Image (cartoon, rainbow, N blue to C red; front, top):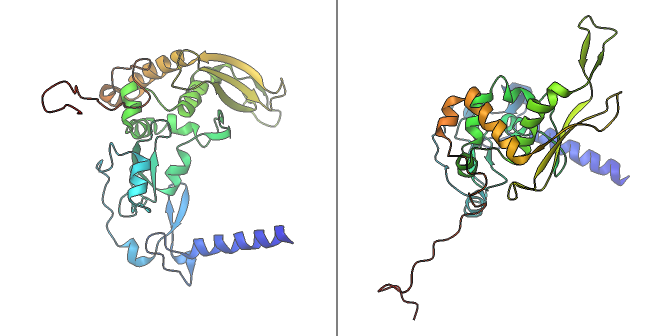
Amino acid sequence: MKVLDAAEHAEQRWLLAARTCQRCGSVADQPEQWRIPAGSSWQTICPDCRTTTLRPYNGELEGHVYSVLSKKRAKLEVSGWRCAVCQEAPALAVDHCHEHGYVRAPLCQSCNTRERPNYLYRNDVYVTSRYAPLLHTHAEDWLRHWHRCPGCRARTTLPLPHLAALTALLVGEPLRPTHRTPHSSRGRKPCGELRASWTGSHNAPRSCMITLSVDYCPSGEHRILAQVPYREAVDRFRTWLAETAPAVAAAAGPGRHDTAPAQFRPVVPDTNSEGLALF
């Protein structure tokens, strides 16, 4: 009974959310009239809010640390902005880099969901069909968005989950086993789920290793395709970035993935000089 009650409660919350305007919070009598497409999903926006002109995002939050910003403002008001990636839907969330902590930009719900690969575990991702097109058809837009983080831009790299997913596409996809499709005229197709996992972290690039494998394939589950050291993955990304998005590559830093500190350290003044003595 508890499970049924919890399911009923969750369903009521979903129905209410579908009827509630995502900007002003008003509730619709006929919610289907308020639903508008937003990327690959839908949003509920009332007619009054729909006529409000959204302002483009021009880097107003650049350089802000997300944890500090969220403490100062319990609920970040981002609905006045247009999504920084698709440039169409209203922004509903502030995307930030989980490795360096910097705010990237306000995004709509659809883009905020699509911008990351599917996590299997904390250090394990599946490179699904939902995520892979970001690095093909809209690669430059997403690379520019990810490099809004000063830490990633200074190191000319990506957060480790994104870097692992890209490495899976660059290195693992050509090695991915295929099998025949008896009910199709295309011959063979890739099988299973492309998977990327890693040991270590971006803070220890010498020992970090990315493992590429395929799950749920008739030729053998958890078949390991390749193991790529972190440094090699970063170098592959830089080469691919220069070919795919030259403008983004030109705006990036010198590529110091070994020497740049993981966290910025405060500058301690010389207290021996005049006027700066502690005692």
